[in-house]
Length: 244
Ligand code: NAP
Image (cartoon, rainbow, N blue to C red; front, side, top):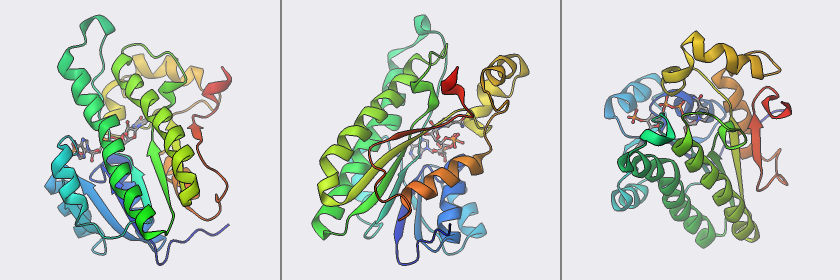
């Protein structure tokens, strides 16, 4: 099965590091004219040096209005991956208001903001399009110390459902992916410690964490014309964790 995005324009948020960086690179490989949006300019500069064809946009997605201004510069987007995300873990009893605001601003409100602007443009242009929101397997499980993070991703799952419900008639497909752990900068914070990792891996029937490419592959499929009737799903990428 060959996937290609020649003639399509893609936007990936949080493309400076981790999963988003690999998503952006793969989109370029598959022919998409790709815009990488992220917060840290040096990450974007190194991505541009690695992949000169990529267009980079520096933007802090926490800033609702500035994000809207930045999106005016990205051109007509056909494929959107709302990937940017943050995590600050800790016991429910110790969570501070600022933790809740920070994670909801980036993990949820930015998905809403970027999704709304890009979908509006797709609707006005009558081109349709495809959107993938990067959620988390933690929405399906109880995971200690993840009260806020998991809640933000549960909100993304529900947003994905409603976006799919309302945007389908405009030929805009919207799906989410729900990965378990991958050892990116974010993943390493908790899961690089064998004391935390071992019991988590023991819960995963496939017996290991994810390689980032396994998340990227699923996202490419959902964005592609091989998935034309897959719409409104929250796709576990979890090595069978849901079976336990
Ligand atoms: P990561 O390595 O920490 O990368 C996150 C990226 O998002 C970085 O480039 C970061 O830029 C960017 N970002 C964060 N806040 C931003 C903001 N305010 N404005 C613009 N960009 C911002 O994390 P990752 O592991 O690749 O995670 C990517 C997505 O996958 C997230 O939505 C995460 O919740 C989800 N996920 C990850 C895992 C995992 O185990 N890694 C599992 C399930 C789901 P800066 O560094 O410059 O802030």
